[in-house]
Image 1 (cartoon, rainbow, N blue to C red):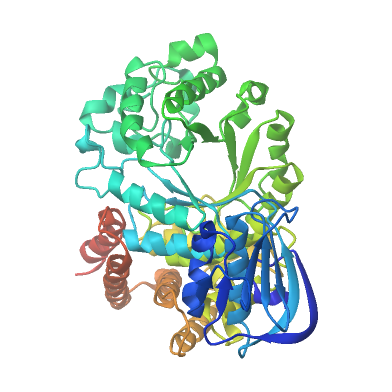
Image 2 (cartoon, rainbow, N blue to C red):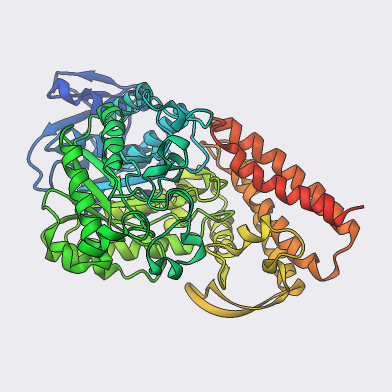
Length: 627
């Protein structure tokens, strides 16, 4: 029976007999405040709610379960269903488990059992990037929230840089797509009705280029938006860390005036008392106009002082801050000085991340979340196995050291060409690990295929894991999946060279390093695998009553994109004009499909970033390789 659920419950005890669900069951509610908790169950079962205990088919009892506000006991007897919880949220989660149990029963008869269940983490979150090019339509964000809440996620954060409609500074968002305060109010209420907390998140130190490169704000950037540095250490920065206007200058008083004005509009839109100030990847901190201040204080102290200053600003709006933990890890001696009302968000996205470092925050008596990722970004399809290792690895250590939460992140580097639809295995695996860290990883793919895709085709779980394994292949200096780099490369690019490379691969149920010859022979081996995967996806997409959330058109597009990349690699040694024309035709078709898929569920926002990648590739093929 355990295999029926996502997330898997903690304890299930089966008993004799079965319960037969009436055509229109009656739900007994002991308090009106529970109406929202059972509304989805009521809707799905066409049930009737009553305040009369007698003859109710589903009886709800508000009682002490010893498992916190989200814990519950769900009991199915031959006569009725009984839900016991100490709070409305516990009732809500019991209803979701009951619905999964009903959906997986072949008939109206459900095996009798007692399920005792509670979460490992108080906070179970998903973090979604809307600032790298794509903002889903509001109805799409609501659908995401709806699905996540039914899998027991209770915190949701959207990543904001420049995509909030500031009234005072319209140049920040004008022409680039944004959400309004009214949109946030709407989402906030929607989340609240589903026992999800919508937490504001805003880039407030690093990753501010979308704001600071506006003419009005350039003087507030550490490098003055000109890559101008005073520190000799600036020469040590890797090229990819040198970005114009990347970080706010803490030495400039105008920086805090700007943040205070932005916070004044942004923070009141959210009812949560929490605020994620971000403050990650401040690579050029203290290297530019804050150099002299950093020399006096030290870069670590300069960083912590900024965090404390933002804590004061956020406090004016009743918010307690949280921030990403990557920079403070470089100054462990300062961790003890972080105020105890601040939450640290420790992140790392590799399968071999040092998960045990969360012990530093435990030792300091701080609240903290562990924040793994879906491994979807800079990939044509998620690196499924990396994501699972990363999520379960963080969850294990976070639970051991008493983290408040597990929050899975989903980013959109490079224009967010990785669709949200790719990330659902990562979201749900994260939801499961946040609820029950000891759940069975080995059959997760089968449960996902059965319960989320709604297919009985036993090939499907293996097919999408195989696709994740192909996507996983990374090599040398190419970040994340090498196929994303190959897809947008043009003939002559180094990534298309036929040569042996050291690559990370998923092989024999583990992520390993291998020497791989990236050549025509290797490409043809992968091509056969991809075509088998595509055939399975296409077959399942034609089944009746499958794919209720419409993932498969996106997943088939991912396969076809990877096929294009692999085919391009195969052709490079014997490239002809005919081959170039074939590649051109194929990528133009893929661009058209990409545009259609994007527009179906997302606002136009900054689609130009992703389309620009297609267009550069197409233009170079036309002008340099075709007569």
